[in-house]
Length: 223
Image 1 (tube, rainbow, N blue to C red):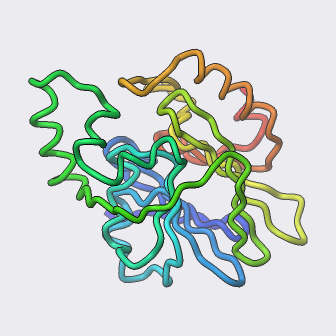
Image 2 (tube, rainbow, N blue to C red; image 1 turned 135 degrees about the horizontal axis):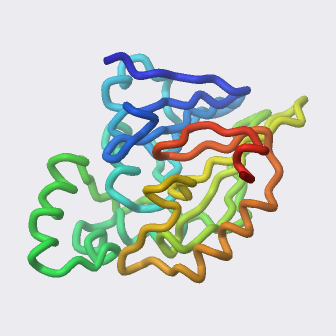
């Protein structure tokens, strides 16, 4: 089936099947006058590869298998992760430590991370921190650290010139019955609750989730 795209200002939401139902996800293509970035390349990016523009950098909201499944398509572009999640992309062992599964679960999941999600380690992946801004030229992507799902999970606020519209990408704050919270060894319910307060205070025209919900306006998001 043909996957859908939706353009909102400089952002194109690359929807996965069933609004990004796991293992699929909704990735964001963000264009500026100087750079084009891809946020959280999902499995849905793979069939789109040949019709994507040149990607100058990849920004990952956090280091989980479904969010890095398309990273391998862009080996020459810098990959960016919050500094707390950065170890996970540097080795498969470090990636598995994020989940903290028991041995009986880890072995098949380790295999799936490689074979189904195309895990590719990158030693020179770059750290970002809360408040950092990626200036794409006329368009900015601002980092908001929202831990809880993982230690380094971040939301990404896209702002653009000559417009009051903004889009907040929520990553794995799903707002669904599947979430909003689901945890592993690197998760914290207390941190997650604080992060919900953080994103609630961010005013934007649109809010986009990686899984399930897709794009919401502010009224629906608050509801």
